[in-house]
Length: 259
Image 1 (cartoon, rainbow, N blue to C red):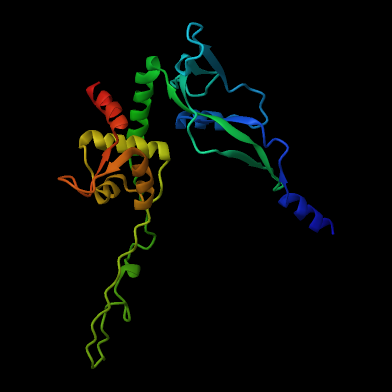
Image 2 (cartoon, one colour; image 1 turned 90 degrees about the vertical axis):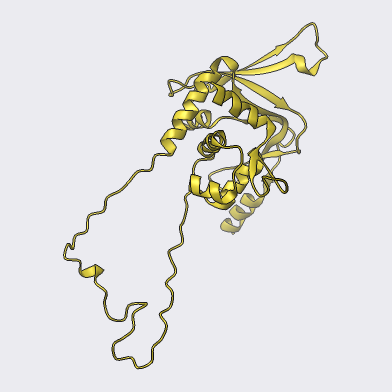
């Protein structure tokens, strides 16, 4: 009875805070990693949100500006000041949480959605950090494996191996083709992969999916998810079957290349 009552309590949805207004923010990878390093039970303030309003244009939505100042960071070169771009036109969303005991609760509904990006004065420093992170992610660590048996017994062809014909066989059978091992690619961090993609599109404006799979060594399906967000697929014309950056991302890439 007690177990059934516990299971029933875990399946119930707590809706006490369902009507609470919540802000949803998309932050850079380096900020998320810095915040994740802080213990959950810590009382440390993560950041301070600054709201500014032009008193001469109080009714103009563009006069309302949001910014964020980081309270502290373990990363020395991480920018401290960020701009928050607010969006009101988005799909209605709710926030849910789950405790260690498996209890699910609603934490509120999203009222505002923000994109967090460094201020212009910190943009050059942030770009340099992204380039360094991209260069480090493209370095492949090589490993050396020592073979204990140096006589080569495990490498000798033995009777009955796939593809060999026994000497006493009267009928000649064709050796079954040996399929090569399937290459399993490991997903990179999403932020690192986006930096690599921007680097590749600096080299040339159009890429086919197969080319990007070879260049990035990433699964094709994962690449498609990134490409759908960053790029436009050309269905016709001279660049048919290739991807190119969306106009808003082309500007940032061209500015980085010019620098």
